Length: 90
Image 1 (cartoon, rainbow, N blue to C red):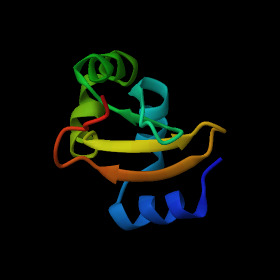
Image 2: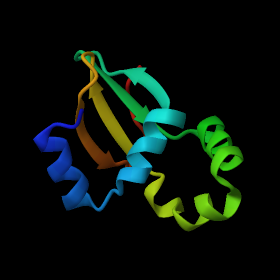
Image 3: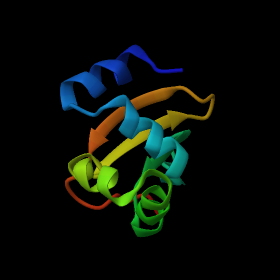
């Protein structure tokens, strides 16, 4: 399920739904210590995505791979954004 806030943020920030699906399927998951789970791409998850989708597809959408998604513990997509610096979750 996608919240209205997340839907707006995807549109405002230009993050395609395909990239959000990839984040949830292949991205690394970490707890944010506020009852949410943050998904983002690290080296390992990018390689897994390349194996699944192909190098060309991933290369074309590489600009979108510095995104993150936050999902609530109930499974609702809360927000989506671009990473400009590293995530400090630990």
